[in-house]
Length: 264
Ligand code: SF4
Image (cartoon, rainbow, N blue to C red; front, side):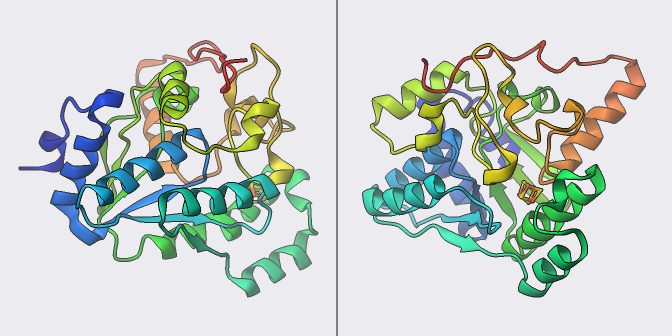
């Protein structure tokens, strides 16, 4: 059975365990969870730990340590490992690549132009992600439709070049995310209680005002249409092609509920 058929209908919080079991059964050790330790990601960490506790093999979990992460993310990293008795692998950028980048555009040069920001995300995120996914046939992400305009068509499973991208939380609402975290007492980033709707690099992420779009805390100095880092660029390209085809414009902020992650 294809993975697309195997996980069909597994879209609710109750079916997360079954989703991971089906994914592991299909891909074995060629399966990995890509995490930023945001709210969605801690749910995936706990689900992977539950699977292992029930006798399944451990699913590899990795985080891209860009070198610019906030201290709260490192604290959470340690708290999750201690709580669930697992290891979250840190993937670091290439040292020479970072040195060349900083020599060329300065330490915070990413704030000076979109190209400079893409260069920084390229060196600190995309190149490491490519390395992290070598030998991986399917990767699991915490992408959700409610997160942003560029994610409204996220599917439970998507072909991503030669790999499959699995998004078990694609259909979860903000409320479902936070009731799952609270109901299972899952450690989460202290930044969420300070108004951060997503967790990213320290200089490029900030708290959002109540009622503001959840992604507005990312790269806030740029045009909102650019508020992705490129990790999910194939999805964005497809969305733009679809928009061009039917001339439908999705306005940022129009489609997603602006609920504070902590429900405050
Ligand atoms: S989010 Fe900011 S600091 Fe992090 S890699 Fe991208 S531009 Fe660089």
